[in-house]
Image (cartoon, rainbow, N blue to C red; front, side, top):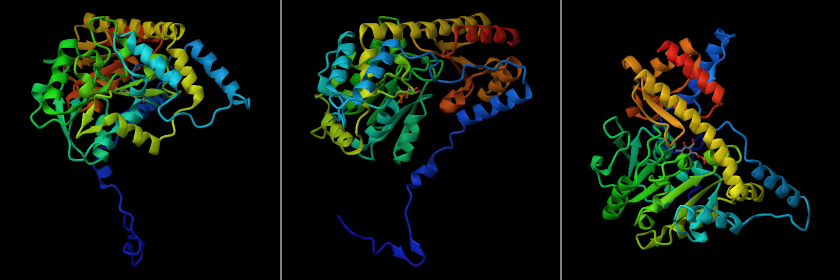
Length: 408
Ligand code: PLP
């Protein structure tokens, strides 16, 4: 520990050094540009009904059982006998037991103390990097959820891409890796492409990580949309994953918790690097920098994972997946190349007539009053592709597809 406060005083005041890696970030224009373009279109076309299939946020309300549980928890907090202050840093045992049971139903056996409750996948995805040396090579699929890249750029890490393309169905495999792999991100089902790795493919990834001493950060944010029973919904369904993978899950898309906030990270006791338990390191990190999520939200999350809560989630998921089918069917009818939509709420399509992502966005907005997401916003390999989201009402999706058919 050194006290160099005096040394830093220079003529003219103190100089604070910023983290220069922030200057390496690309400005995230994607969603602000989409919002600006949509707003300008609405202003210019006040009578048009603009339909939004661009967002990755859910639109349907919470399962009633979760609402009731949170209301009851609020009442508990207002009574001295049941009031609660700081909760256990790892999450209340009742919620960890509920998550454990959710995984047991998939055939994944976890200990409750291998589950760390947090405020959503995004925070844990970024924060877990603190456990690993800056010099590790980071492997990121392209296209993918942009937070992986930005979190690593902020930390000044070396990022290498594995490319998704039509040839691999936007599911890159380890044979595309030309550097020593250290930290590998896998997002399955993938945002934005909706592609899902099958069991054999995930086994290849797990074996690869074990062979190279690498760690897989597995983002299962969209696992609840997988209906094909042959597809894995957790990396821990694959033998050996306990020794090389961390899984980051969330109730955001499954239960409509994007605004409520509740996620979890699973780290097996068997996950060790450099002789250190990654779970213990994560616990230490969380205990230092995080004070948990509210009792109220954890009671809501517990209710989500009851049979009644899961049934409520299932009803919402069924609406979204019905929309996804409508979109995929329309693409098939139009002869447009696409993936996703079967086991994910996103349909990833090739922009027709060789249009760029943004040109197709402009065409859809101008001619059909439909907002989507340009694929270029998810990585270089997303250029020329486009994401349509199933998070909307059945009526809006049907109308959007009718308009697309008219203009294409
Ligand atoms: N992971 C992926 C792949 C996502 O698409 C998103 C949000 O869209 C998240 C994580 C963030 O999830 P959370 O709301 O739990 O932070």
